[in-house]
Structure formats: C-alpha cells, structure tokens
Image 1 (cartoon, rainbow, N blue to C red):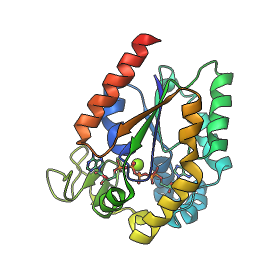
Image 2: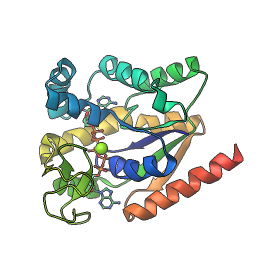
Image 3: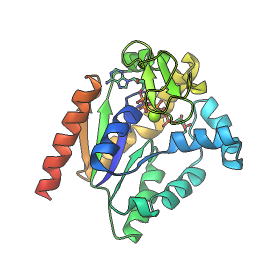
Image 4: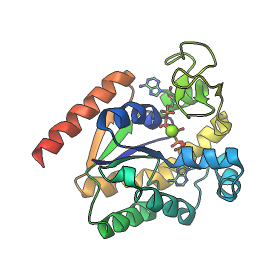
Length: 219
Ligand code: AP5
Ligand code: MG
C-alpha cells in the first residue's frame, strides 16, 4: 500500500505512523525526521533546512521533493510506503504524482487526521521526542514508562526546537495556507479518508487499519 498521512502539525501523524508501518510492513518516511537527522549530523541539507524549520516555515519544495523521490525508489519501498509530512504543498503533491506515474504506480489512500487547533497547541506543549529514533511521547497523555527515556530504544527524550509556542502558532498558520489545500486536492481524486484524531491512539490506529483494509478488498 502506498499511503499518505495528512494533518496539521501535532495531529498525531508520527504517532500513528509507528504502528501503521509495523502492521502494514511498509517503511515510515517522515520528511521532518529526515531533516532533523540531517540537522543533528550537520549536513549541508540540515544547515539549509534549519532556518526554515526554526521559523515554522516550510523547507523549499526543490529540496524536499528530491529527497522523497530518491527515498521511494529504494528497495524497501517496492511493496509500499507511508509518507508522513509529505506532500505539504500542491506543487509537492503534483511532483509526487508525476514521480509515481513514471514508476507506473500511484497513491492508494490519503489518511487525514482531524484535530482542532486548541488540542494541537496542548499536545505540542507536552511533547517529548526521542533524540535517536524520533518516537513521540506526551508528558500527560502518552508518557514513557521511565521519565525522559524512550520505551523503544532507551535513548534520551528531548523537547523539539520548533515546539515553542510562538513557533507552533506559525506552523499552524503555514499549515492552513500551504497544506490544507491538499484536502481538496486528494478529495477530488477520491483518495481522501478523514479520521477523528482526538480519540485514543490505538482506537484511531484500529479505525485506519479497518478502513484501508476494506478499501483494499474493494480494489
Ligand atoms: P514535521 O516533523 O513533519 O512536523 P509537523 O507536521 O509539524 O508534525 P509534528 O511532527 O509536529 O506532529 P505529528 O502530526 O507527527 O504529531 P505527533 O505524532 O508527534 O515537520 C517539521 C518541519 O520540517 C516543518 O515545520 C517544516 O519546516 C519541515 N518540513 C517537513 N516536511 C516538509 C515538507 N514536506 N515540505 C516542506 N517542509 C517540510 O503527536 C504530537 C503530540 O501529541 C505528541 O506529544 C503525541 O504523544 C501526542 N499525541 C498523538 N496522538 C495523540 C492522541 N491520539 N491522543 C493524545 N495525544 C496524542
Ligand atoms: Mg511528526
């Protein structure tokens, strides 16, 4: 299955991606995680991306698109992939469509996680992420077993640089301006499926798996 996870910052894309990618056995590809890894490693890409990310803006399309195009052609994507945080603009979505067309394939479904702004702001304020594997936790709603330590890999949990309140508000503004138009874009292609992202994590995962399973049976 070739899937896209769509939703505002903090909607729970990364959280859902962990279990969806495990259940469906397809790689989880997060452009945000790729940029953060490059920033940590001090690569040229990381240096270029950092100023945009810290300001709550999008990294330019020309940088982002080529990363994803290369990634989806890797061997582990032969049976599908789960894109998290990409595409984020109409031009990115069009480039993805063209790239997949040239590989004789297409997106099967777009999972849109719906969460109101006030819930998003609360989620980001309490988010902690693993320094090494990127897994997300929340100090109140989804705490790790041991405070400050990742359940999955044992590394330290940190606060993301772009989770300061003023940056979160800027990211939300960017989302409504640049990314929300993708809802109509994918709706028009019959690919959009909306989910209530405010439910318990496992419940949303179950609903997503059930819905895309039924959809696959129909195709
Ligand atoms: P990116 O890393 O993609 O950030 P984002 O879209 O802003 O989304 P987040 O990762 O903040 O949220 P999420 O939806 O993954 O939520 P999470 O699961 O963590 O991008 C960062 C930056 O990189 C962008 O701002 C941009 O600059 C750049 N970038 C990335 N991709 C780009 C692209 N394609 N083009 C251009 N620029 C790009 O959950 C959030 C919190 O809520 C956590 O604490 C979690 O534990 C909690 N939570 C999750 N689900 C639930 C639930 N059901 N109930 C209670 N709490 C929950
Ligand atoms: Mg994320």
